[in-house]
Length: 414
Ligand code: ATP
Ligand code: MG
Image 1: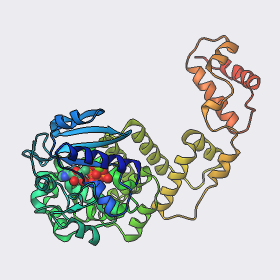
Image 2: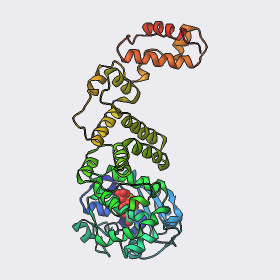
Image 3: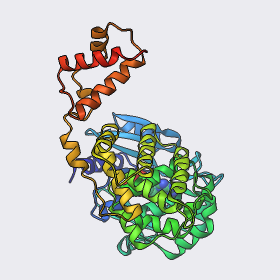
Image 4: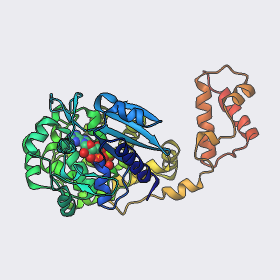
């Protein structure tokens, strides 16, 4: 038994010894039954948060108003949440308000899908009021209760259904799928950040396409912020879905997916790329993520098969090998020119340095040798030296760089 599970079972027993009910619940039970390693262990209990806090010596008040206390036990961290149901829903979003309840069944019935509505006690006995175990065996994602009602309460569940289909390689059951088609416009109200979280999980899944196919076929994707009705093409072939599953990084999957849904038969790829670059900032990615996606897009849209060794090395200097390789791969898939490959790997290996910080000189050295006050010339000179060294034109030795940089910097006016 792994340490996390061992600690979680200890926590269950401690709660029981204090006179309360306590079970593992949700994703960890589902994953355990599927013989997958759960990411974390969540516990549900009829003990109120204040009781949980008093029973354990190390707790964190993660979300007391929602009934959640984080318990740290044997250095393992887990969330312990009081049985609860949700308050009223506004704008098809989960409410902040919850109500504590006394029955396990009520807590399980408020959960989204049957496979997520399972509880397990410390002896591994499963509590299942919704045939969740059967759906796990069948590989089906099915809502607890009437799908239309559950999606009207919380529109994120429609996207979660697609996400679980991708993560588990499951099928969304027909009634649930029909309800997504019917209720899709509720998704307009979702916060972009939550959409991004679900997509990130789809990208990390082994079969991203298993989640994207229902997302696209039900047209739910068109309703998601920030897309709304900007998406055009939803005719995506099996081969293209296959490409998407082959791509390794989330950035590549983002760009390829956006390409698939934004392309149009009668417009050029450049227009498609322009549409994608307009939508990327609306996703509220972190600055790093946004920068990577926009750089990748820029590289693809300016890609040229006649790239010379000089230009290739400049690209490598600026964007580094990983990003350039990703751009090449994507460009090949998009243009279906898989056989046109440039030898970036060997160009990269030929370059004596790959990062600015490896340069054997810095700004202070240059200020000293030139005696000039700092200014834009400094950055330009360092950039020049970086390129000269990386191209193998001069050696990465301090005295050599001081001389070359001194001469170059002296010729610059500011
Ligand atoms: P993951 O492995 O991605 O963490 P998970 O099943 O644990 O999957 P969470 O988002 O962590 O998913 O949620 C934990 C549990 O809470 C779910 O298994 C489900 O029972 C319940 N849940 C989460 N979000 C919702 C929702 N929007 N509506 C209803 N129940 C939900
Ligand atoms: Mg979880």
